[in-house]
Amino acid sequence: MDFTLPDGTFNRGVVGGVLLAMVFFVLVCLLRALVYIREYGVWSYLKGAFRVQNDSLGLVLVLLVLLFVVILFFRPQG
Image (cartoon, rainbow, N blue to C red):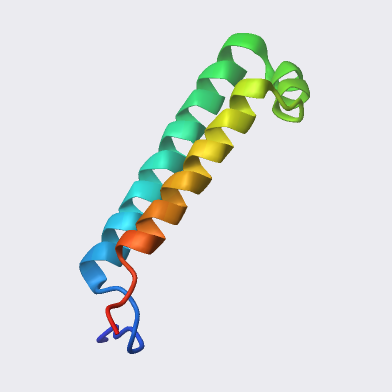
């Protein structure tokens, strides 16, 4: 099966790299969650998972800025 992207989108290498980075990020998050659950328990994890902290908001902001830069850098030349 040949996977082709519509005209005006990124090439496969860029899309593959972004997907690979997202998979790595999810795996790291899952590993950290499992370590926390093993150490402190499920109930403590659930209480902490729904509490927003200042450093979490900073991380989300950094990720949004990084996404914006990637979109601007790899936009189609037209």
